[in-house]
Image 1 (cartoon, one colour):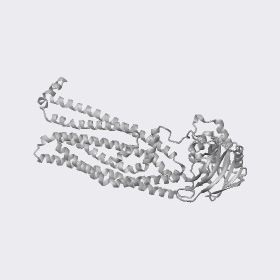
Image 2 (cartoon, rainbow, N blue to C red):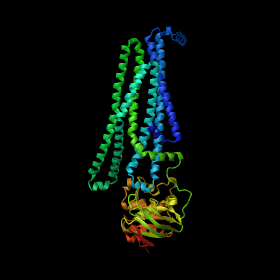
Image 3 (tube, rainbow, N blue to C red):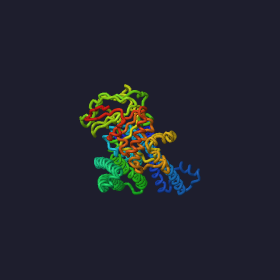
Image 4 (cartoon, rainbow, N blue to C red):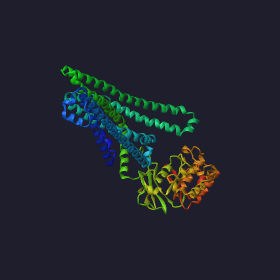
Length: 580
């Protein structure tokens, strides 16, 4: 019961109400099932008694009124009515099942979108401590497991439990002794099976989803590093690591499937044995075989429905138990996704109404930073001022703190102490508003699998794309002539991760992307390192023409790139030395 409460806690109030409607429909379906089974007894009684109509004058008068005069005609009439009832009942069950599946799929779609929004909204530090394969698994596989497997299983479990209870109540009316024996035997049987397999199923569930994240990690790494993989002839390395994880994933999955099938065989043997023992018991008690026939018909039909119902109850419970490991791992994220759905807003952060001005300067005051897992100060009480419109060069050895400073400036990391002010306002008071001023060109440009236009404009809608502006930034990035030489121009696909372009072309597209957003602050992290000297000089000249209009902050190892900067900031052991 606690598990079911926990599952329904991730649903909104509206979704829970709809779930209640589905459960009520399940109750109605169970009642129809019981009526269908209960109707078999009177039909068998009618068929076995040629003088049934003569014994029941009221029924005889009614059927005579509709043109039925013989016992045979009455049997045919009752059979047709029962067939019609079963048709209507099963149409209702089909409709109910479709509603369940449609509802769960809608929840899955909302959850996948909500989870992606929650993860995209996480601070940059979150990604330093979480493997992207796990996040990918949660959004892609996890949302399906939670709603298409766990929630559907919960609905089905409730449906089967209600159906079993209603059929048992019918048996109680027909033969209370038999009903009590059936309930006791099946209750003990299902409890015993669930208890025996519970811990092992939980363990196998943990193994399956642990290894699913690992094999996804190796799969992603194998394709992401395909060039190095081939050059270093390491195909077998990735194949071996993937195969090891996938084999363990497969073993856990197969053991679960076996454990889930085993109860079916046990239940079938026990139910058939119990039913035959009951019949033997009735005969030994002196009840004639003729009197047992109607009861036998109801028992056979009840067993026909209860046996698969018992199988499904155990199987569904096992499925829920098996998948709860992943559900519990994702629970907090699912609650956050639910809250986003309840607010009916975009799951991504948007700037609040407090605008951060930037007309004068960026002031870095006593800035310090250290990662949570160690006490080493990457930045130690750093202070300096960058006037608006300046071209600032940042230099320093690897590990000196320059990249950490840029990450803080970009709003990716929060300082451990100190502040960065824009015209006297702390940028962390509204980091999303601050980021609207920024453009960033990293050393390694990531390109989406789309067109050149898509990669430069990114989130800008097609209707909002300014062709003249697009052409201007292509010229500024020294890639306009190349794009024009292509058959499809800006609509040319760059391939996954830009594989159809050279390193220099990818870097120039990254520069064009940064300039397209009309930034007030342009941050360049080794942005021209993959370019030849002539192209680098041309782009540097273009960027220098923006000096005064925008603030340029450039990390570079080539001192020639920083010749025209207003001053340099040298990072060394977490400290900063200013060079004019």
